[in-house]
Image 1 (cartoon, rainbow, N blue to C red):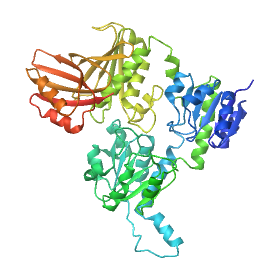
Image 2 (image 1 turned 60 degrees about the vertical axis):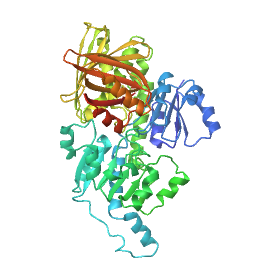
Image 3 (image 1 turned 90 degrees about the horizontal axis):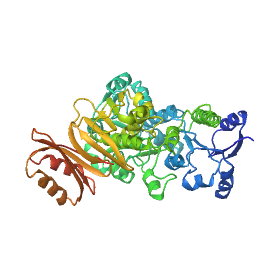
Image 4 (image 1 turned 90 degrees about the vertical axis):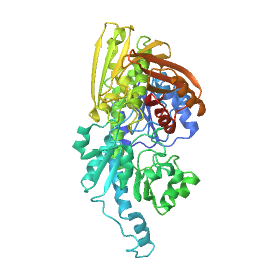
Amino acid sequence: MSQTVLVLDGVDAICGEILKDRGFNVIDKPKPSTEEFEKLLPEADAIIVRSATKINAETLKKAEKLKVVGRAGVGVDNIDIKEATRSGVLVMNTPDGNTISTAEHTCGLILAMARNIPAAVDSVKAGRWDRKLYMGSEVQGKTLGIIGLGKIGSNVASRMKSFGMNILGYDPFCTEEHARDLGVKLVELSDLLGSSDYLTVHTPLTEKTKGLVSLKNKDQLKKGMFIVNCARGGIYEEADIVTLLDEGVVSGVALDVYSSEPLTDELKEIVKHPGVICTPHLGASTTEAQGKVAEQIAIHIADAMEGKGFAGSLNGKSIALSTNDEVQPFLKTAEKLGQFAVQIAPNYTDEISLSYSGTCARHSEVLTDAFLSGFMDGYTEDVVNLINARFHADARGMKITETATKESRIYSDLIQVTLPEGADYRVISATPFGDNDFRIVDIDDYGIEIHLEGDIVIYRNVDKPGMLAATSSAFANNGLNIAALSLGRKKDSQAITAFTLDGKVDESLRLALEELDGVHTVRSVSL
């Protein structure tokens, strides 16, 4: 009996044709009603979607036969990957299919702003001839700042370089070598914001990227810059756009993505501003891109269901290991350690060494994947997980080394990461203590226990009376309660101290802590 694939959201017809040729029963429903969708779910062995259909816990519960979900495109915001993994459902996407189309759309919006093309078109169609009104500017010799130098950001860089633009880049994981090959100069984020005539972002929407341009940081921006967003809605603070334009902080805004799609009434008013160019999420909307992703996802789905391959899988290893009681604690420890390490690592960390000792050493390869998924997740334009973490690291030129020994050290199992020379905290070791209890046990040869959860502040200090009183008073004055404390000390009167708090430490408090006598290299981590 042939297996059934439910194809939704108007995926290109080539998808269904390939699946039928491979012997699958295809049900193509571009826009089924809620009732139709729910009736079809029990029949589906696989579901293919674009961005409209939500695959959540409720959907997965009703799709009793479901084995695979495929996204014809990159973003999987509409698919609950954790719930799918828990349900044993493979999730696949096509990460390369729309790279060129999104990069080209970004470049098109840059040129459209530079030459006032949309407004000039409207003027001529209205019967006017306003040549002087729509005087533009050349992009040659101007500076383009790119935040996120993954596949799309790198393609934008190479294309706009050919227009004679100077390219600045910010990406914590891009190596100097990769940037040099692209003709990009890597700089700190503040320098990029203050030096760019044009700014484009190619990152996910995270706590770190949300509101990246807003009234709060308008003084950091180069006055009169143009900004483009073809990545995720909300990276620029949409509510501040009109004020930024009216005050001349930015000269133009081009948006293809929005925090709410279709637009809310509030967003409709914002995009009416004459300084805004807007398109309805067209980055991947080319005939070529839709054909590519439809073809790729059909092949991925067919191969997976026939057991021939798992290209494009986002959670394959997770499913394979989800029932392995021995591996689970180490996977979680490695991922948490990665999340911790990235928040204290230097910018442009391009080299990481990992070592494993004890029984966990036999799983070193997948533990490195778990570490990298924690280290890089939220810093690239795509979802990062066990399957694709090394791909993203390799794409940025990161050098990853790993060693493993079955010999135990002080702890029977130890996962250790060594960050590059110059890191404030360089060698960090962690181990699981039990279910959902993952701890750092050593930092730079200071024995210290830090639970890898919550909001953590870590600093170096002189080991003398009164140090804890000074820092705890600073927390109290800022309304932060102390949940846990750990101290590592040496005979040289130096110590490392870590607090877990009931709230986040903002930058002003972090700087205030560094002003305390005997306290330095204060870092805050949120897990």
